[in-house]
Image (tube, rainbow, N blue to C red):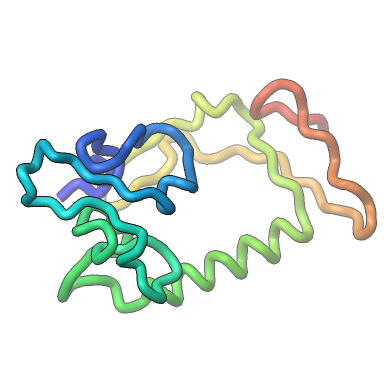
Length: 141
């Protein structure tokens, strides 16, 4: 199963190529499956912190699903959230190239094809964040 294709399928997600974090607050179904796919139901999340195979009837499986699901999925998400918060609190990150130059490669995992060149600047406590450059992906040094 190609998780990338599953997560970007227009049959399973409304406007899958559009960045829309609010999509996980909206119910989505597709009558084209003749009732064989339950669709995505945010109410089925229960106490889960993020969408999973239960709420999406296996249309969203970033950590796999069922008996072979990654047992460390909750820890991985908490660890990533804490690490990102600690880094973003202390540093500003901007792409050093145009976003189209990054590229994507797939295999056992999905990763950048050409790396992810970034300009990293330390934040000064108490000062406002630096202005974002007018050109996407280009920042002043």
